[in-house]
Length: 415
Image (cartoon, rainbow, N blue to C red; front, top):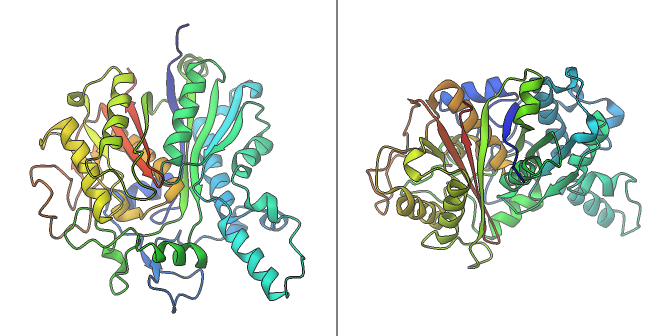
């Protein structure tokens, strides 16, 4: 059986630094931080009082009033970015066979805000079981993919991948594989998350995973910096339209890039910590490149997972140096320094960053790095402070999640 080729024909984004693809890219290249004081709830008793929220978000601008009651914030973000990507692809005007179109989405924790609010109300009502009739369908993670297919009438496969912060790359790799196997012509994929809630912030604080730099939120996400103290929570999402190459060509679709490889591995090490030597990350990157029939020397840009945690940053760079060597030729950048960490949506928003870097020949920067961790080689090109012009033929993106999940996606310019 000959495997099909897969390309990206549409993208969508809503993020702490832009509520559409164009604004996201402009602010990413400008090195703008999306962090600021949390406005979604009262934080005065919390250790961390800031996050990367989506700015100027008004749900009534996107949804009818009756719809809002049925949609968790995570689902709202997913539907918004899927719509932008679908429109960008032009698929609905192309007479596509909707029986051959699916939706494979991703989220790390799904409708967390809905769950939290319903339980709070339950307790406040003296545990009288009066729950919102939309409680379950708002909360369950798979509702994003389900609602995408319902809205557009897509009748192909539909489900959600959950592997913590690796979820989006998992969803994209699954979509890539199903199209390669001729199970679908088009799959709407990506991820979304809305984790800026009391229980979420409190829970991650209790793990000592998040930054507590409350006096200067804009500089709190500082991957590789000597003084980093944890990640910065973020919300939002992004979508990619993956499509079989010949199908895309037949309808005259624009092509951002070709998806050429996906790597998956497990650390088999610890429930939250990455392997100190980055062995799982190394395995995922190697497998992705092998599947793409590429070598490390072929890669121009790698968007790092780089959450700004003490061990995570070091272990990922250990894997990078093992695979690529201690060379400044490869551009590396950590865009979470601007967007914060979208958890299950991280891989999708970072894949969009890679695709736009390939389109524009411009590598987005790593910001907030003031004092390089002495354990990190100064020879690595971390694209510090400002973007760098570079033709990107091959771009990669890493995401890793609690539980030891490691995922890598490889894109190549379509020729």
